[in-house]
Length: 227
Ligand code: CA
Image (cartoon, rainbow, N blue to C red):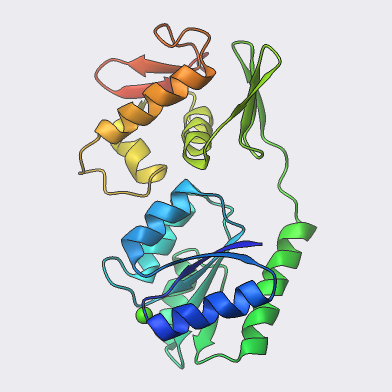
């Protein structure tokens, strides 16, 4: 599995990386909450091991933002021993399960394996969309136009998924920033425009006359063909 480890204590972080890599997993580790949201909403992961107490953004908020952007991403929260309230808050924030620190190596690996099995047993349904002569396979992060495969980033897929899910209306830049990037909507919103401009170059027949991701004056963007 590809696993994102979020832990600020260096010894524990390195220990987790060694342990999981030793068990055959592909691991990316970050040490603070904001990096976790950035990395976790940009690259595809099979699961996240998330510490609760983190600098820059706590685990609860990280979990909330990751789940907004990737509802099906499994999150295993690491909490301090006996902190019952933390567990409850963690699970309310969307975490799928928790492990209390200090945990045994075997216990952790068993939990990670159980996560993997759960993911295999409940394969997500294919997310296939057809729009303006473009076929999109959101689960596999590819588009096909005129027989050509177009690789899409996880962020681009997140954008397309959100716009399609809310195709009955226009979506603001602030909403996209919050829901797809997991960032505060008060931040500068040029990021959204840059990403959409790049996406249009990849998937639109004519990027200057877009039919898949259309602009809505005064609001933001919308899924092309409408509801
Ligand atoms: Ca910590």
